[in-house]
Image 1 (spheres, helix red, strand yellow):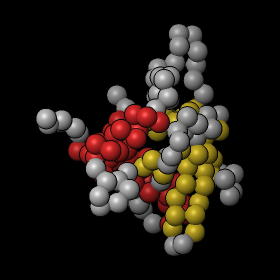
Image 2 (tube, helix red, strand yellow):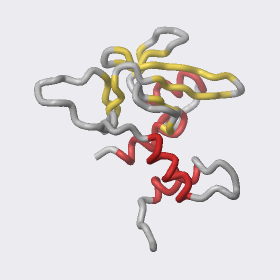
Image 3 (cartoon, rainbow, N blue to C red):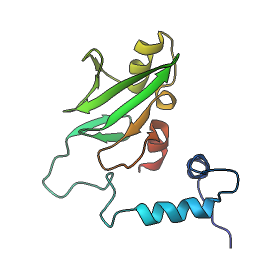
Length: 136
């Protein structure tokens, strides 16, 4: 049997392979076993409820989302508080992932590729860019 998946999905599955003997099928089985029986964090909010968090382009990051990045051997952290991206070291507000990356690297970099993200309901860190392609 063949299963068609988006290239970004295949890349994400490949990044979760434990070693050279691991298979994509085993990764999917692990993910399905670990998946809660509740809707994912990206599910639309119930009627009347206004979600707390921030939008960057088409990606919604809920209140409490953690962000991290590494540059020149140092790890940097940020969080979503209220509706803003907050640099945890300085408390400065950032307007985009790329702006936040610029303040760390002092260079123009793609913030979507620079940052890892962990939403409140996530068990592990994900590429911010992977969220960008997975949301409607």
